[in-house]
Length: 144
Image 1 (cartoon, rainbow, N blue to C red):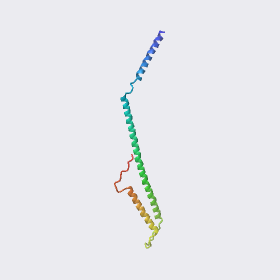
Image 2 (image 1 turned 180 degrees about the vertical axis):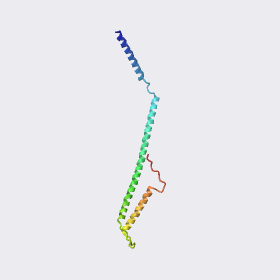
Image 3 (image 1 turned 90 degrees about the vertical axis):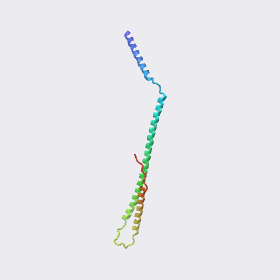
Image 4 (image 1 turned 45 degrees about the vertical axis):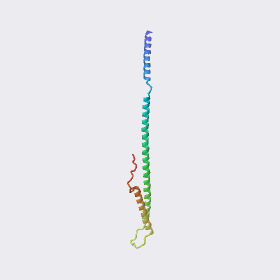
C-alpha cells in the first residue's frame, strides 16, 4: 500500500504542475489603449484602401460606358449612311443605259438619281466632319 500512496502523490504533483502552467499562459495582460489605437488605425487604413479601389473601379466603369455610348452613336450613323447608300445604288441600278445620242432632254429618273447622289454626298461629308472635326480632336477616353 505504500507504493500506491507514492504513485498517487506523484500523479497529484504532476497534475498541479500542469494546471499552474495553463493558468500562466491564459493570463495575458489586457489590451492597452495604444494597442486599440493601433488596431483602429490599421482598420481605417484598410477601409481607405478598399474605398479607393471601389472608386477607381467606378471611374473605370464610367469611362467604359462613355466609350460604348460613343461607339454605338458612330455605329448608328454608319448604318444610316449604309441604308441611304443602298437606296441610291438600287436607284442607279434601275436606270436605263444611256443611248448614244445626247440630244434628248434629261430623263426625270436621271435627275432624281443625280439629286439623290448629291444628297448622299452631303450626308457623307457631314458624317466625315462629325467624326473628324476641323478643330484639334479631343482625346477619347482610354480604356484600362
